[in-house]
Amino acid sequence: MILSDVAIQYTVGAVSGMPVVVARLPDEHHGEPRALAFLRPEDTVADSVAVIGGEGGPTGAPGAAPSAPAWDGTGPAPDFAAFLQAGGHIGEEGLYALAPVMLLRTRAGDGGDLLTEVLMCSRVRVIGTLFTRVAEFRHPVAADLTALVEQALEHTGAYRAHVTVEENTYTQFEKGTEIEEKITFEGGIPVWGVARILWSAIQNGEFSGFITDPGYEFTRWQFRQHNFEVLASGRSAGHFSFAQHTDGTYWLKRKLFEQDARRRSENFIAGLHISPEDFDGYLAREYPDFGFRRLATTTRSRFDINVQSLRSGHCFGIETDEVITQEPASRTLRQVELEYLESRVHAGLDPDTVDTEMDTLASHVEKQLVTRGLTVRRGYYSKLSFLRDGAAGVPGDGRAQADAGPRS
Image (cartoon, rainbow, N blue to C red; front, side, top):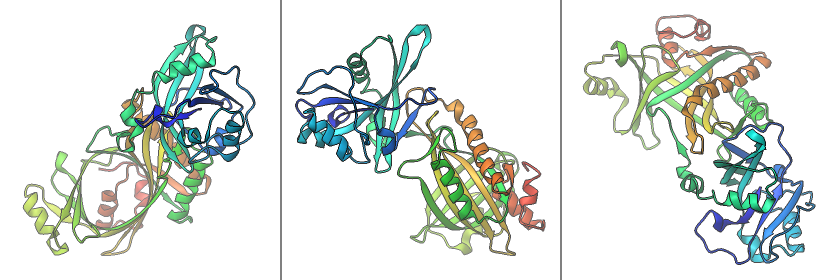
C-alpha cells in the first residue's frame, strides 16, 4: 500500500519534501487479478515499511514496521504516525497531507517477468479503504522498489475522473433492463433475520470474492403498491404498479415481459399527481391499446444488502422481501432477490461477466438459506405470477407454485 501526499490524486497544493511511504502487506492466498481491493484497518498492518524520497532522499531496503495499522479509517494510526515522525521521515504538515494513494498487487507473469496491478484509492470510509484497478504493467523480477513505485506513479492519471469523484465511479449495462434472479423461501426465520444472516456471512468472508458496499452496506424499505396486470400479449405484456412518494405524488413502475425470466424491461415515471380512484382511468388514457386488470394491493417490506464483486467490479443487491396482499385476502410471498445494479468503472471491465457473477452470488445465498433449514427454490417467480395465482384462487402463498420453476 502506497501512502503519500493527497496531491498525487487531487489538484491541491503539495507539501514540500513529502515522501512516498510503502507499506508491504502480507501476501494473499489467491493472486488472481482484482477489479477492486478493500482494506479494513486491520488489513493494513505492514510486514515492513520503506520510505522513498522526501527530505531524507531515497531509502534502502524496507525496514521493520510497527504492529499497528498503517491506515486506520480517516488517517494513519497513532503508532504508525509516531513511527514515521520518529524516523524523521515526515513532519506535522506532511501527516495532514498523508493519504492512501494506491495499492500495488504483484503476481507472476509469463516468461519469468512479474505483473503489477495499479489500484488507485477510490473510497475512504471509517470502516476501510477501497481501491480500483486502473492499470497493469510488466517488469523484471529484479526491479528495485524505488523503480517499481516510480513506474506505478506514471499510471496515477488513468481513470482519474472515475476514482476521484464518487458520483463518476459507476456505469450500468443494459439500461432499462432489470437483471434479476429470485430465491423463494419458506421456514421459521423472519425476513429480517434472513437479511441479518446473509449480511453477517458476507462480512465474515463466507461469500468469496464479494464484499458489502463500503459505506452503503444495508438499506431498509417499505411501500404500498397498487398492481395492474397488462392484458396485451407479446412484448407489451407485463405488470404496472403505483406507489406513493412522501410528497403525496405517485410513481409508476412499468415492467414489460412475456414470461418470468432473468431479464425484463423496466422503467419508471415519477411525480404523478393522481388519486388512487383514478389509477384505472390514468392507465386507460395513457395506454389505450394495452388493457389492464387490477390485482391485489400489496405491502412490500425489503431489507437490502448492497455488495460488490472484487473480481469484476459488478455491484448487486441482495434484497430480502416480504410481500403481503391487502385484499381480497391476505397472502404472503417471501423471497431473496439478486439484482444487478451497476458496475465500477475500472481497467478490464467486462459486461459479459454479469451473469456468471450473479450465478455465483445466488449459489452463496442459497447455501446460507439451506444451511439454516429453509426450503428454497431458485428461479424467476415474479410478483406478477404471485398475484395471478392469488386472483386464480390458488391455495397457499405462492411458494409451492414457485417450486414449479419459471412461469409464463
